[in-house]
Length: 63
Image (cartoon, rainbow, N blue to C red; front, side, top):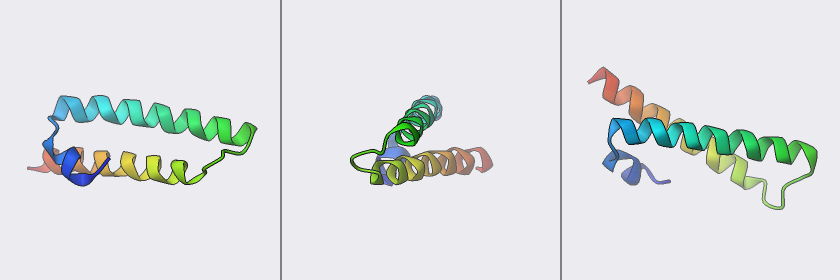
């Protein structure tokens, strides 16, 4: 998910997306621990997406 897409979402949508993305990351990480993923870069991309969403939420809270 790109930063421009994240900026267009409302706070409620961001919180929902954050929950979904964190769950997806946890599931992917667990499956990677059991058997290696075909594309482990997915983990990095999801982790960065979580950070982008969390950063945008924090930024909006401070405004």
